[in-house]
Image (cartoon, rainbow, N blue to C red; front, side, top):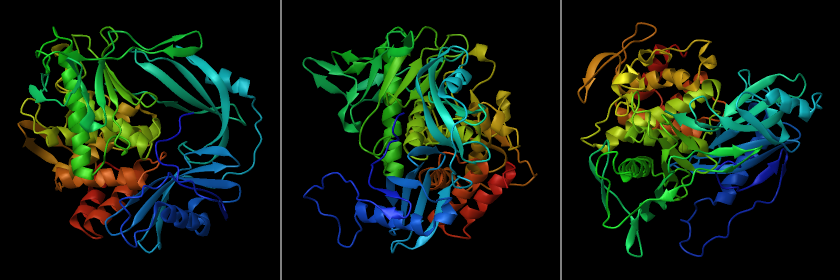
Length: 535
């Protein structure tokens, strides 16, 4: 089981503090006077959990581990924690503790409905593995006993977590974790962890773009030391494969090299062309997060990821894989979709990594829809941020990669998501049952309404016409404010099990933090959620 991104700062058993573990402190520079250390912030947050246990569904047998701390300019801290119960991971038990500069309680964000209770497995691990088996997948390793609380009711249940790997219907690699109720044998949740999307260089979609590269001997590598060493490699039209029960062979990623530091020719005849698109998309997305939010890379640790292009044969998708910390792009089938390396697709996939490193929204049900919506929202924000004349900002997803055979001019439409034929414009009790790429419509629609407003309008030459579920008229607050509210909600208030009702609360909290209680922005957030039937 892959450990979540974040710094392990301290751990505490409920009611009893333990010693903290910190990396060695550097001698210089020293922290500003009176600024609490990470140790102090972690300790006081853990003390708050002990004092506010009833509000956080905490109780005997639980332990909390700090995995990240964010501090606002006014000193308000937001401490993200993972939870265990009698040494078992509580999936969906993560929380964020909010405290003032002085340490005063300002609330907690969590979805766990009640504290876990003692239980013994009545279903064997072997039976759980058999139950978890499904088409085109091989069950791997041993089943892990966990407490599963990421179901719709957020009630904790003892469960077996089973890993399987295989292939999705379109050829995308698949890594699924299935939670099987240890009392009844019922499948509680299946979580797909491969999150899909669909010098200078002459790109396929964005024209001629600047690139930071690395010289190695007499050649240049498509590797950017200024952005954490992010690089782009050639998957050589191979795919990730499994042999017997072990997925040990991955598509190679041979870093692109060039003799004169001028990459690609703007056509598919040069294999470096789509590599330019992928590298450029990664660069711009990195800069967007840093310039807008001060975020230094996907995990905010300054470390780069990598891209694989030319994956598979006529592979018409792209995906983020947390296990390799990488984005992978197919060349498309040439009829419906071209290479999936457009700027918004690259930003979409990289933003999956940001979600993984922060709220870690479960890729299933409504939280999965929010995960996908986050990537679409940030992809739109990156397009506008880039200001690239070859690919102007819009509220469409994948508009550059679609071909005439696709039958519409984008993969998804944020102003009216149902235009794609499958996505939900408004929330209903059945949204949780949709594929996450379609349940994302509710979040996408909310964001569009919040940024631009309802009704007909034209932005950057693209015509939009956004409806509301309640017949209301929404006045947008602008893209910048809407993006900042969503990002703060994601990184400060959302947790792995957040659903659409929880996202409303999270964004209202974020708007209050950024613009003040009773502000026009806060009122607009409430109105936009009501307009997509999230009350």
